[in-house]
Amino acid sequence: MQKLLRLSIATILAALIATLSACAMLKTNPTDPEIQQTRKLALKIFDAVEMAGVGTQSVQQFEIRLHDSGKVSDDAHRAFQTDLLITARIVRTGLTNIQAATRVPELRMTVQVIIDNLKDLKTKYGAQMPDMGPMLDIVISGLGVAVLFLGA
Image 1 (cartoon, one colour):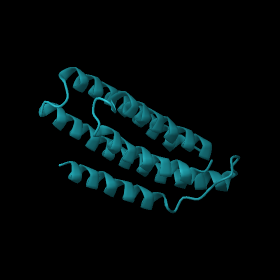
Image 2 (cartoon, one colour):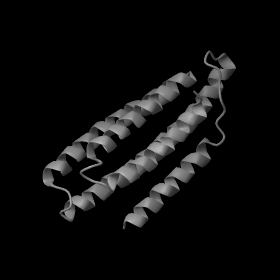
Image 3 (cartoon, helix red, strand yellow):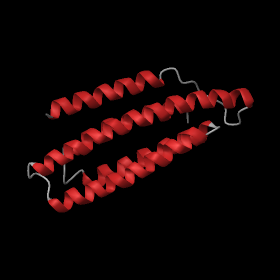
Image 4 (cartoon, one colour):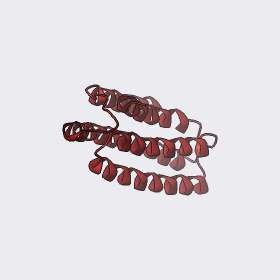
């Protein structure tokens, strides 16, 4: 089962990289044509964040299976699921921000907030659920690629 989950997350990561491969670096103070380019880039970033959401959903389903098999306590399960609800809110807000962004730094900052939240989840639950860390790393790495395409 773990191999299947890793394979599905790896597939999502590959699709994420392919989606972002056409992204171009933009200047920090865009002109009107550059704003239009940023909007096109925002669509790709939006897709990347949605794919990361699918990867995070796989992490959630894996945790539920761990809980159902008795490997995760009820308290840890409730806490993890609650934190995933917070993550979902952050991602929804991020998707809204991506749709409204007109500058590359806005896109980069939005994706970074999502990455930071996922890193916090990994830190908080990595010791309790050791298999969760590598799965979250895959999603984080995929979003990291998006940040790389957006430039420094």
